[in-house]
Length: 423
Ligand code: LLP
Image 1 (tube, rainbow, N blue to C red):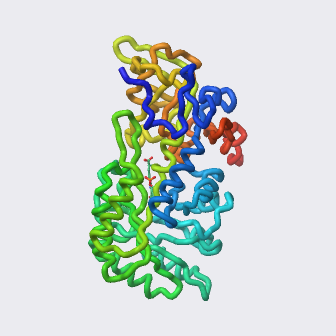
Image 2 (tube, rainbow, N blue to C red):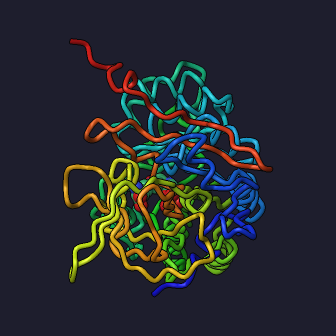
């Protein structure tokens, strides 16, 4: 038996109407299914704006949104309007941000294997920073830079810190494909190489210890390593990456942005790091802003085993349960205050048993075929990791605000699915 879905898993403007229906952005969530179809990602625009403003207000001008968590033109524009820079990890992300009208100098290009084309395009448009990840890349940038120009770069360091998160999203440990290892001397060699490259303007250093980090003391440990390393160099900028975790289930609690920033600034003071310190969160900005709504297609009660509730999406719109064993909650937006006393397993429509969205979900006992069912906290790495597995078209995405819903990504069509076939 579970209580009604809890407020900390819902977007900022979520309210329950007198009829028990959930409203977000002043819009009745269940109604969106009829207007836009399902599966549908529903983002609370005020929540997105609030989180961007929060990050900028605690971390200042360098605060950067990691677009990999969720990107479309509307999102890029929103983050830019709210004063954030944008971290883009590929040429694709960079081009979406540019197409949205974000000035190139507000972009920070990441990636452990940027292609020559990606680097050339970034240099050509004049991105604000390139975060250099290897000596090969460093030489490539030097070669590509037009004469008379210096390319602003940061060096990505691997501080040798465990982030206490899932192995797939841990990046700060020495055994990593990312960055220059501090302990081996590779980082020092990279600084020397960057400083002696005439076309590189080394602004500072960068690290990212991992994602969905719930223990913020890990950042203090990373800063200690960085301060120790940076002592001889006087860098202007230090980026401590993103990674702040969020709560996905009612039993989880996550540190907020303020706690994150206090731990970082206290550690910086303690270790005497005298540089502009910035962060680049993705998940903490967008995860709780959205929920996915689905339509219940079949309900199978297996006596003595469990009840399977199947919906019209699945691992193609939320790969996280399959990839990381991530846990989610589920509820009925038409009965947001109802006790959830019926245990179910929420599954998708894909052809494998691993296609589970919520392994141990609870819903009101009157759940029926045709119901609109929601999974909250799907705003990060949901749409952005979606696929066309089983040739399922990707869902649509709406932003809701002030009683209106605006389509920001339309649902893919069968024509979209066929558009890349040549034969
Ligand atoms: N900066 C860098 C260099 C990163 O690699 C990442 C995430 C971020 C910032 C943003 O991290 P965030 O604040 O969103 O945790 N697909 C996985 C997450 C992969 C994160 C990859 N890098 C998931 O669904 O949990």
